[in-house]
Length: 167
Image 1 (cartoon, rainbow, N blue to C red):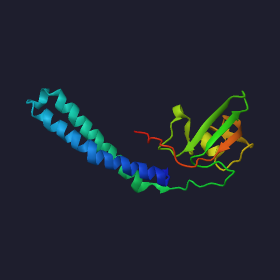
Image 2: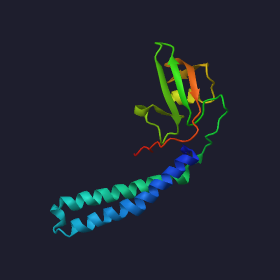
Image 3: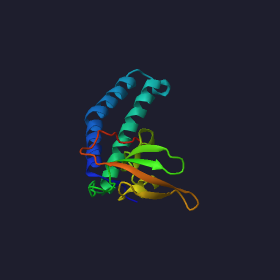
């Protein structure tokens, strides 16, 4: 399955790859070289730690390159009055009257602790394409669902500097 990414997501990934190749990689290689010079590698914790950091960096680079290569690019555009990617939506949960504000993002930027919800999450899917004032049923699974009302919809003029999730 391909990840759905926006052009902005891909740009951020390319910037991270460039940073990791030009800044992190040389630092990691220097740390490995320095630790190797300390002698016996079998008991050299610094060497093993430096190798681990180097390998994690290389793994992250490969992961990002694979995500870009296999991505399906989606548009951030939506109608002026409809919920779309990078829009901020305030919803009221009809069951208890709680009001929450979320920003709809792609899966690589989703972070529920910062109220960034994925367009592929149950709530994100249910809200996409809906309008302010509408009541939307969110299906979690066959047995569980809930209703929310879209209280406010804000179009995001420019993409905030959201960080990509590290895996």
